[in-house]
Amino acid sequence: MCLFCKIANKEIPSNAVAENDHFFAFHDINPKAPVHVLIIPKKHFDSFNDITAEMMGKMTTFIHHVAKELGINESGYRIISNIGEDGGQEVKHLHFHLLGGAKLYWGHFADADSKDFF
Ligand code: AMP
Ligand code: ZN
Image (tube, rainbow, N blue to C red; front, side):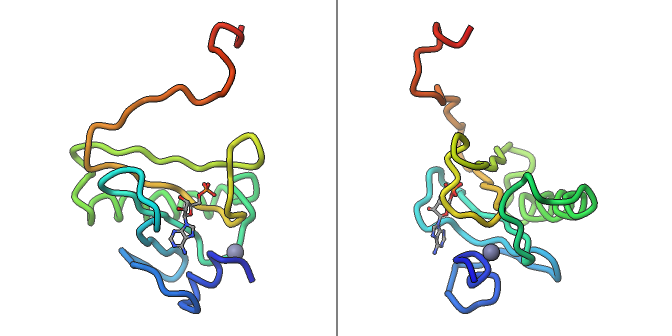
């Protein structure tokens, strides 16, 4: 069983924010913003590549709920899902990073010089 399956099952403790039958939200152990919460489906999907549109629809409703609970739905936030090797995904269980609580920096994501992109 993977790390986030164990967190969803409460076999590994986490700082929970919200949950329902299908999803779980908990604070990231290494926050990159004043609010940094991870949102996962309780059922294992390796990444965003594998989730169904129906499940993603339910997840959208849950993400809206969590953003409201955290009080950042009006001030704004960012959701990120890292996918696979180039996406920088470290934990191979689908998760959305929900970041907010401050004006977020919009960075330069690739190692290459942007002049080399085109
Ligand atoms: P990613 O690089 O998109 O796969 O993100 C994995 C995230 O999981 C990182 O931001 C880690 O800080 C976070 N993380 C890893 N282990 C834990 C844990 N036990 N509890 C909470 N967050 C974790
Ligand atoms: Zn898993």
